[in-house]
Image 1 (cartoon, helix red, strand yellow):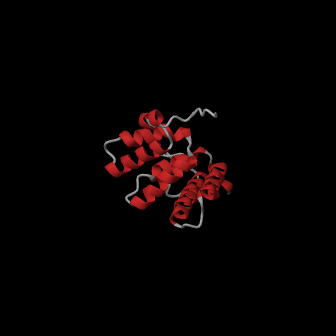
Image 2 (cartoon, one colour; image 1 turned 90 degrees about the vertical axis):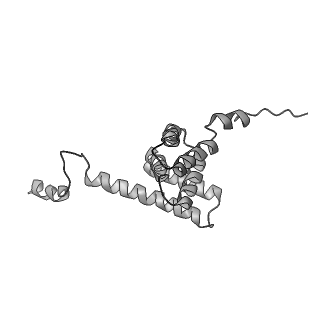
Image 3 (tube, helix red, strand yellow; image 1 turned 45 degrees about the vertical axis):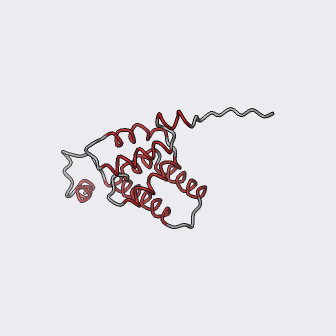
Length: 145
């Protein structure tokens, strides 16, 4: 009887092609919902930068590295405002593990130019481009005299 009940959850899912289960699908849905929530927070002017960073860190605590990866995937949107918000979120998050993903997106000529530009802007905002590291070194020495 338990086996029969488990089949109900697998209806419509071709198990030979994918190894997804209900829990994984629900987690992905929650992750997408969280990313969309963060993007919508950007549209409202109620949160300042530190509060937004706090919301991002809460998302990272809940979803781990998947949150940053989903943000990178969210760059592939037709909505320029959404892309702008995602770029800001990626810069705030400043996760170095997203750099290779963003570099692949920015160099993929099959993607629209606007998506590649958004990925490049996120990289520049994170200081992960040659140009930004040349002109704005991260370690600055100051002389007090």
